Structures are given as structure tokens and as C-alpha cells.
Length: 340
Length: 230
Ligand code: SF4
Ligand code: SF4
Ligand code: SF4
Image 1 (tube, chains in turn blue, green):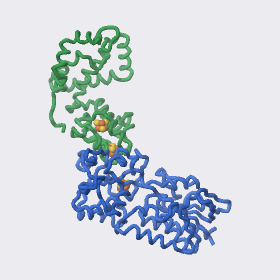
Image 2 (cartoon, each protein chain N blue to C red):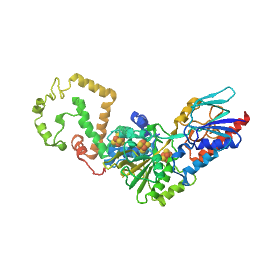
Image 3 (cartoon, rainbow over the protein chains, first blue to last red):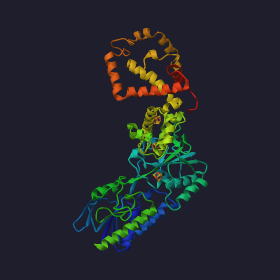
């Protein structure tokens, strides 16, 4: 019987584990935290159907109750080696050793550290939060300013840490636009009286139902979309945030005072993704994500035989695509093992 | 490729300042000139990016390119690492080379700069000396300046300026040997030719309008204000 070692227990790793195990393959799933789910643990509701993120998380967890899957929680691979027969041995942080016939890297992404965009004031001004912070506020059903007031005017800032040569990220993070639309609608539901603005450059509504959600945000939820990228923000004496943008459709500079500013932080390859790439000698794209062997025929393959990739370690993906990508990786691995 | 675009591509400021623009408006949002004037650096970069010679020619003949203060705030922010301020420098250069600057009010002020600062540098080695700042031309300097101007020699003696005299001192006369070297620097670097060009294009315009370049035309570059800049 073949054994596969999966590194990373986020949605991609969990789904791939389940698919491989269902095909009769032994799976070791390694997760550094004490629970699976990865970044999904930080989310409240999912687009486009507003499903509770923890429902999906739970379902993925339940799938792991399979006799073929061994879960290694709170563990990190400290060393990975490959022998002449193409077998992998992975030493874990507790000193134990796992062996497998193939390796699946599912180490995912991290969100952009908004402090690096100093001119936006995250960590400096009181009423600047990230989209991740906002999910947490949603979970606690408390959208308040630092003084505890209801924010009357809220601005959602697109492309923070993405499409920005100044922070060395040329890529588009793909999901923040629709996240912004979803969060604007959630804000409107909780704060029917507040003004809500999205400051965007392009609305990248790539998934099924996304464009419709954007339209609904405009028509039904009265969200104002202003085409202009944030240049810089300042704080006034009342701890409001004053933003400088250009309304590019009118061609005029614009100053807006906000009670709360939400930064839609982009996605970068996680430290574990970069670390695994180094350890395994796998190539990175200029974006910092792992470069697949071929963008059409080999998106789960790397230049290293027996090393496979899935999920957001290779590019920003929504959950639909992540789960599909995990299934696709399982198919690639099964075929590889059968040919061995 | 048209002549203007070719000239722009030969300009180091332009090439350094322009990669590609995604029309995000960050430069305009931070630009101090855009706060006061009817001015939008994003639109300028976009116009250059579209590459229509006719449109760019119009830009070179307009007031628009003369509003920028060359503060380079835009350089610090552009997510594509453009510098609209450098693009403007390139556009200004071509406007000066082709004589398009005489078509706009702000552009015509090139002659005032040439006549005052340019000539002053070549004659005296200073951009400006106190005797050139005539109170009637510079009411913004106020009554104190007027008093200093009237008592210039006494005043500068008192503060050891050594105004226009040989020897040491902040306002001393620049000696002949240094002046000679300065002229040669201007000749070799194209500075002299550049100033002559500004002068000859302005002279043509003055003749066309039937005014005297050094009197009527010059004064007009100081006084003219259409009030259409905001
Ligand atoms: S998805 Fe939208 S907000 Fe995110 S980087 Fe792309 S364009 Fe910007
Ligand atoms: S250099 Fe010119 S365009 Fe750039 S910010 Fe300063 S005034 Fe504006
Ligand atoms: S900041 Fe850069 S990319 Fe954005 S509009 Fe200005 S020049 Fe174009």
C-alpha cells in the first residue's frame, strides 16, 4: 500500500487527505496548529452564499475521521529527505519520522502585514483595521470604533499589499474584491444607518455569483463604490481617519473622513510555503508563490519528482477552487503512485 | 513613432519616470498642485501612455504641464513605480525644444525665467541678486524689502554682504575667471543653446503679437492671469 505525506492541514490539505484516503492510500497529514482549517479559522461567513465558515471547516474535519488518515497536529516538518527510490522521509518537530511515496505541499498563504504599508496607518491610527480583524468583529457582532461608538462612515480599501510594486507584490490577490463586497453587505446589515464606501481600482468579480453580489451591493445595500486607490491616511484629533484618494471617474482629488477604515489585505505565500520550497528545491514564481510545472497541464506538479502542490501555496484561490485543486492533486498523485 | 514620442524616449527623466500606468489616481491624490490647480498627473501619464501625438502636442501647448512643482511626492507612492513629476520634466523639455510653450500663459513664463534667472546666472554667476528684486515687480516682498532696496549699499555693508564687490562675502562679485568657466559649462552642456532657444521662440511670439520682447512681452509674463487655472 502507498503512503502520501501532506504538509499543511488547511482546506486544501484536508480535502486532498480525504480524497487520497478514499482511494485506499495511507495519508499522514501534518498541521502546525492544534486544529486543522488554517486561515479558514479566521473567517466568519463565506462568499458567495454567506455560509458560516465554520460549517465548511467542520465538514472538512469530519472527513478526516477516516481509517486511512493519520493526523499529526501541532507538528512541523523539521527535515525532508528523498532517497534513490523516490521515497520521502519527513522528520517532525517531536523527533518522530514519517515515510511516504509522495509528498503533497499544502502550506498555503498568509495575509499581507498591513503595517508594511505605513502610510495607511495600521497599528498607528486607532480606527484602522484589516479585513481579518473585521471578520473577528463580525463573529463578536460588535462593529465599534476605538471609542466604542457606532461608526457612521466606513471606508473599505482595496488592493492593500497587492498590485503594488512599492511592497514588491506585483500580483492581484484575486479574492479581496469579493471579500470587500461581502464585508460591505455584512456591515450594512448590522449598521443600516452608516455610509459605506469601497475604494477600488478594478472590481474583479471572477466567480459565479460574484458580479451579481456586487450589483446587489450597489442596488440593494446602497454601498458607494469610488474608483480610486488610497494614497495615504491621516488621523484627526477625534481619531477619525482622513483618506486621500482621487475619484478617477470624475478626475478630482477627494478627501473623506472615516470613522472606521478597513484594509482588504492581500495574500502572500506563507513562510512555511517559502520554507518548504527552499527545503525541496522547488521553484518560486516572482510573486513568491510556488511555481507549478505548467499552468495548464501541471498545476499540481513541481519540477521535483514526487513533490506535488495544492491550494494557495501556488496562487491565491477561493475555497471552491482550492477544494477542486485538492481533488485534482489527489488524482495526479494516485496516477503517479500507480505508475511507480 | 511620431517626433514628440521619439524625443520623449530620448529624455532620461521621462524614461526613468514612466513604466506603465494603471490609472489608480494615487499620484493625483498626493499631488499638492492638484489641490490648487485644475491639474491631474494621472491624466497626464495616461495621455502619454495612449501615445496619440496630437493629444500630446495639445498637452505641450497647454498650461497643464506647467502647474507641477516638481516636488516628487508622486514618486514615493506610485504602485507601478512611475514618477509623474519626471514625466512632466520630459514633457516640459520637449515643449521648450519645439517652442510649444509660447502657446500658454504659464508656458510663456519660461521667458521671464530665462530673462531674469537665466541671464542673471550668465551675467553675474547668481540666479538672483538683491538689486534685481525690484519692489514694484515684487509687491509680495512688502515694505521692509522696499526700505532695504532703497538703502541697498548701506544695508549690505552693514551685514558684511560685500554686495557686487571683489573679495570675500556671501554676495561678492564673481571673478572673471570663474565667470568664464561658468560660460564654458553652459556651452558644453547645452545650457546656452537652451536659453537661446527659449529667447528666440519668445521673440517670434512677441513679434507676432507686435510687442517688444524685453518690455511688453516680458511684463505680460508677470502680470497676465486669465484666472482659468483652478
Ligand atoms: S482582488 Fe481586487 S482588491 Fe484584491 S488585489 Fe485584486 S483588484 Fe485588488
Ligand atoms: S512632482 Fe509634480 S506631479 Fe508629482 S506630486 Fe509634485 S507637483 Fe504633483
Ligand atoms: S500613481 Fe502611478 S499608476 Fe497610479 S495613476 Fe499615477 S502614474 Fe498611474
